[in-house]
Amino acid sequence: MKFKQIFQRLFGSNKQKPVSPQNGTQADKSEKMQKMLMMLSNTKDVELTCDEVFALLDQFVELAAQGEDVAQLMPLVKHHLDMCEDCRDEYKVLESIVQNVA
Amino acid sequence: MDKRTNEEWIADLRAGGEQQAKALEDLRAIILRGLPYAIAGRLDPNSPESEALAEEVVQETLMRVLEYLDTFEGRSQFTTWAHKIAVRAALTELRRRRWREVPLPEMEMNEDGDSSYRELPDDQASPEDQVDRKDMLKRVNRIIMEELTDKQRKALMATMEGFPLEEAAQRLGMNRNALYKLMHDARLRLKKRLEKEGLTPQEVLSVFEQAGK
Ligand SMILES: [Zn+2]
Image 1: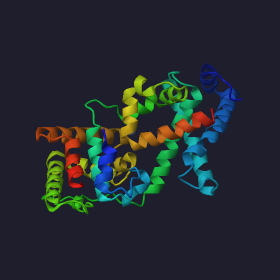
Image 2: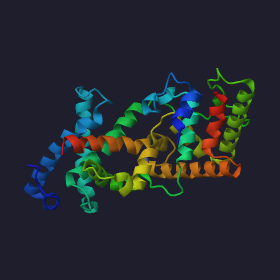
Image 3: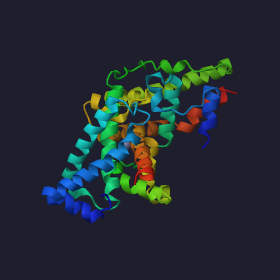
Image 4: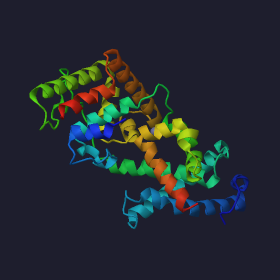
């Protein structure tokens, strides 16, 4: 997929910052459209829910920390993390804890 | 000491009395070492607010750990599992604080589909391309109006505005898990409707790609 380029052409090259929660309410309208189309194109018929991902997250984080190919081993968890910012944020924090504290 | 095996953690936490109290004390120290990673970038880590938050979260986490001890399946280190519970509790509270003053956005799209999306950068687009683009936006907006429930549209707007799912869910009177399902259903509907109209999300984007040339 070459969405990145499409977006840059579409929305101007001067701002290629990723859509982030920090944009908050300032997210401009075109970003909303682009975010939605991205989400649509990545939508799968079967997806895990937040609770299902939460149940597997500790295992997923440890496997990733051990250098395992988690996208291969737990593709549905990986997909959910790509789609869901709440779960992704939690994953990132847990990952840094496992790397630094454990 | 925090060098217990998973089995020892479980046994100690179930033991009651002194043995349990010691395990809780050790677990508390471990969780407090992890929490700065949740707070970093969200609150000033040295503020009294952060300290109070950490205290609040660690209490809640220890309670939940005891409550859900039977659900621990040993697929990870026990401490990773406990950190996971702490992270969820911490981020939930941090999201609530950050977003509590922000109202859920109102629907911006009107029936006509002549919506907010029209203000796209179009410096390079020819007049024909601009028309194509506008038509496509109108079409997508119409599909959103026709396919989604009111709740789904509200949630879609909110997440596009950067609202955390959990916060949007709470305002809509549901939990995060249920809202994820609702939004998954909404995405599937929109995608299928686009397909029915002979479009993929990529094709919708490509209209804008051409328009930008
Ligand atoms: Zn999620």
